[in-house]
Length: 333
Image (cartoon, rainbow, N blue to C red; front, side):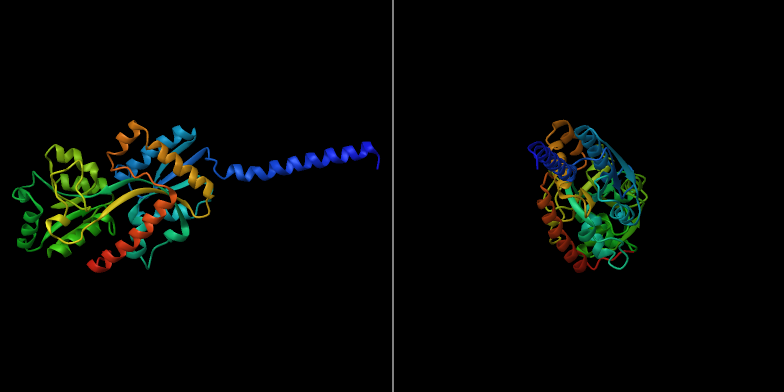
């Protein structure tokens, strides 16, 4: 072999080695790449707290990553339609499930025979956005509720009303349904469930005096401040900063009562972990922006967490809610 030919062979080998290195690096670099166009699939109607949180984070993620994030509302079956759509989507980061905790921690129990997805096997948690404690409210202008100034008053009214009181919710098997049925069990009252298609519709019902009571999210605060709705109790186990004088159901003597939801992001199970971590980092970084924090806090207290912390929270809450549902003998209508 001549020196010249040997030199050419060495140059060719070096070039092939560099090409192999570059080719190998492409998939690794793509693992955390944000798609140019992504869809945030929401399992609830526009106007509710999950939809609000989704639209706010879509705007932030779009600005931060210089990509497009659009919100796609797919209400129905307590978010099962949206969950199934995301489950069947390619695991490329372009389709994200924006869910309330009910679809992840409660649906597997409430819809055990009919559920079309498995939260553990079909999704990877990305990041939580906000916590959503519920507020028990009545219409202050409803003649039937004029004497109801406290939860005790409401319980007494329900007990002396032959057919009981009715309450509106965002749908069968949702967190409002769970909270109200647990309240009925703990207070020994008859509370009749009137399901609506979404949170906004349920809120419209209480404002129109079509129902006697409801549990609502923090989005109801403007109506409370205006005096249209009267807050009687909080469903979580601690008082809200926005309503420091409103007690929790638990502290009023109705046993262990801690029912609160949250909104979080999920992707199909096989989505690269590097992308999951990247999206989690972008969400948590957005939460540090004062203007964004102020807007998102309207939906509920912010919940910055790592992916692992979010996974652990989901596991614990799933078991805790399973115990509540069984103890209270809650079933879907």
